[in-house]
Length: 114
Length: 115
Picture 1 (cartoon, rainbow over the protein chains, first blue to last red):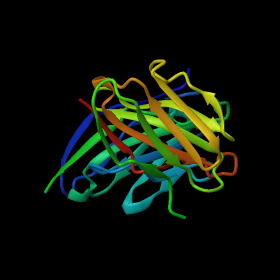
Picture 2: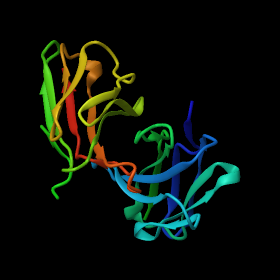
Picture 3: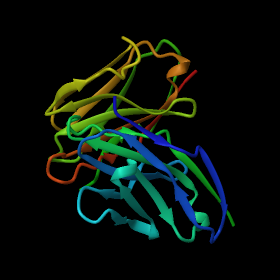
């Protein structure tokens, strides 16, 4: 069965540090890839998405992610984090045989210290 | 568009009572999803519908849980009888896949507390 794995459960950074959150999926076919963010007490919001084309995707608030097909990865990056980036981040995948269903990773909690 | 609407936003009930959560998806979206989020289990997909028809309910934890979608603009998730371990945030999401916009749009959630 398809699955999504996020390597880090909790990441703690200081402001201005660089961020990279890992995400790997298991599926050999066509995928669409997403990163969602959940700020404390709020619902999930889309951060960025990849469907096709340039594997380097830029999202809101300075985030970007790179799709590396050979590694089945879609890591999230930000060169300089801010305290307001404190949130939980979810990687998700939709596949060509799941009809709209997203498979979510377990989430990574990011804490940014001011 | 107002986005996905859920009600109530907060629900506190006693064990054994029936709880009904409501969701209005984004107009035109033909997929609707119900998720449960807890600290212990993270984000779990309970059930999803396509064109008002349940497609996959394998995530529904027990027979105490049931979901309906009587029309394209309304869905309910019912728990009867409720138990303390049902305490969680329940999210509804909708999407319109197949058009290059597969992302799901989440509602604000219903925080359920069963005492």
